[in-house]
Amino acid sequence: MNQTRRIILHIIADWTAATLSWLGLFLFRKSFIEASKHGYEIPVNHDDNLLLGLILVPLFWILLHGISGYYNYIFRRSRLKELQHTINSTVIGVVFLFFTLILDDSISNYRDYYLSVALLFGFQFLSTLVFRLILVTKTIHNVKNRVWGYNTLIVGCGDRALKLYQELNSAKKSEGFFIKGFVKIKDECQLQDFGTTVLGHWSELPRLIQELQIEDIILCAEASEADNVTPIIDCVQNEEIHLKIMPDQFSLVLGMVKMNNILGAMLVEVDFEVMPTWQKVLKRIIDIVVSVIALILLSPIYLIIALIIKFDSNGPIFFTQPRIGLKGKFFNIIKFRSMRVNAESSGPQLSHDEDERRTKIGIILRQTRLDELPQFINVLIGQMSLVGPRPEREFFKEQIVAREPIYQRLQRIKPGITSWGQIKYGYASNVDEMIDRMKYDILYLENMSLGLDFKIMLYTTLIMIQGRGK
Image (cartoon, rainbow, N blue to C red; front, side, top):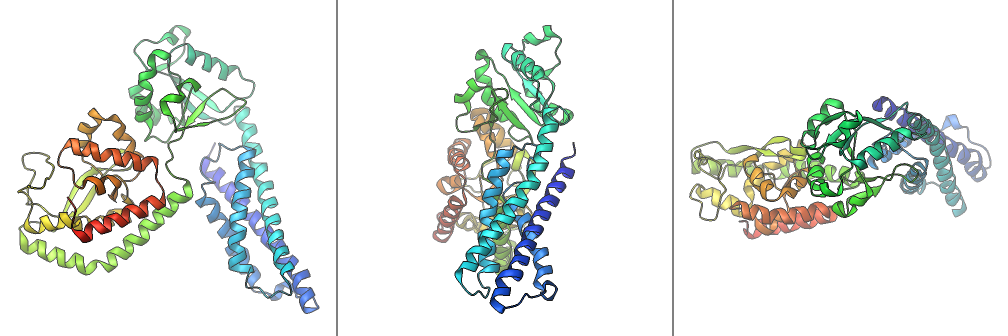
């Protein structure tokens, strides 16, 4: 099954539905509302707004559906979800179109307003839902009949894994799992006696996911393997997969699970998403807009700082260093240089309040956080966000993970110029402080919202103005 082709098909269906609904409203208003106002019917071909509306209005609906995340996971649809999303998006879209395109119309009475809104909602909702139900019914039919499915690994080699495998294979209607094999949690594996395919140990999951193009992982841990559940989740959290677990593991991932379906095998899904799609899109838009404005407005300050750094000490103006970003990918962070050249000639070191490696201007830059200003470039190109956990070097990350494996969960989101932990602790002087700072970043991860981002940015601005940066 080709996901891109299916997404295009859904976009075409939504575009067609939006075109038909807007055309229906336009014709009705011309034939009845405006005709009753003027006393005669106005020919449609005399209105230039028709063609413009038939282009811009469907485009608006496609953007709205995209921002809401509708085109994600296009093969994992249900008719109930289609109904819910169509109602929600139609309400939001109609309200927006009413205030932008309908409210300023010349009308004879308010009844025409109400009628226009009701008709637009009815046309848009029904036409969109009909097309979507046709497509999702076809998808469900192909999944249930094992025409389409998701490459799947079962993590576990005990009785529970075998029972699930037999249940999925014997079901008359498939749930879409194409089982590629089993993965051991511990060295022993009972399933080898049943002729099943055992592909390796759970620590090899990242490699297996890439090689076998795995889309789903089902975790079936025995009671004696409960301690391995959290490490397995952390191992795959940065992979593009859907993780499902057996019900009796609820307590181990409390707050991260959601029911998958009712009639099939009893599975729950671990939800790695930290923000709704629309909030993630809006967060990225804010990152871009603020970064562009900052780079333009602060350009004189950039120039002044660059000149001072150049005259203060020998070496480059900017300092770049590999850091770990989203999903463990490396990128080069950009900062104004605040230390002497070759400050880490004897190996990676963290700065502290009495650090003699700092230059004269470097002390001021770090206290006011002005050394972080070039990171707006990292934000603009998508490597960082305005708010997010501070990115660490691999050398220190390994030390943190050895003591606090939960740190790896921070890689679910982009690192930021500032963070909750940065406000509380500033620049960490040792691994202990990095772990203390991490606790606030984990708290941010579990409570991410645009409102919290604005609060963190506000406090960061106050720290910069007051020069309280550590």
